[in-house]
Length: 147
Image (cartoon, rainbow, N blue to C red):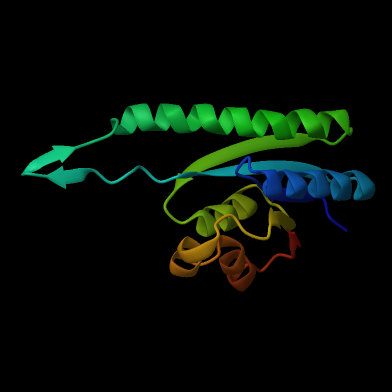
């Protein structure tokens, strides 16, 4: 059935449920797991009174994103190892997380994607759209959505 499942996570409580489900499916079918985190894109500089304010440099932001990814993905790898599931981890900084998820699945030769049903709520979800919905719309792979 599946040989390599990609599980997209952001470290939230709901995505932790998706991680647990992905580990369970991978264990049941003898698949390996690829854990993926899409770090938010570099924040846009703020302009005020003719001065540009950058919260941090791009280099510093990349370092912080890597630290966040390591923390989030280490938790997934630890849980997978405890269940006897082989797990690799990867992350990218992405303006469009749904595109990064699909790209990670392709790059890592995954044959299925597991993710949470949503990451944002309320107005931001309506304005930005659901990353899960976009993955479902554009993916050629099976997508397991965990609620």
